[in-house]
Amino acid sequence: MTINIGAADRVIRYIIGLFLILAPLWNQYILSFAPLIVAASVVVGIVLVVTAYVRSCPIYTALGASTRQK
Image (cartoon, rainbow, N blue to C red; front, side):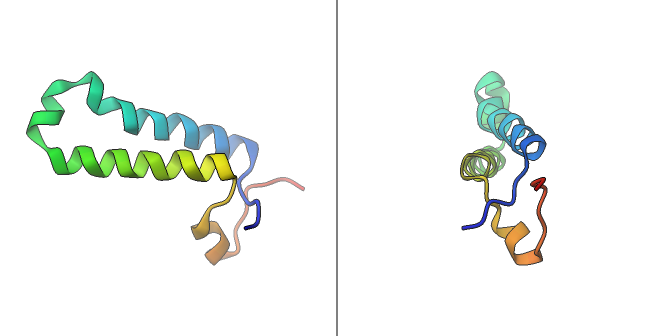
């Protein structure tokens, strides 16, 4: 697994990922209104946090992209 996520990208992924995971807990109306949207939000949030933690994005790898400065 190659490191292809830079520092700024990593911070942005953590912030957005944590927001997507925690947002449904702040607004109880969303939980009762659209459980599928809540589940999708949490899954996307977890993926963002995990990719930020391991510093590797499979989509970046497939595209040959990288935000890491060398």
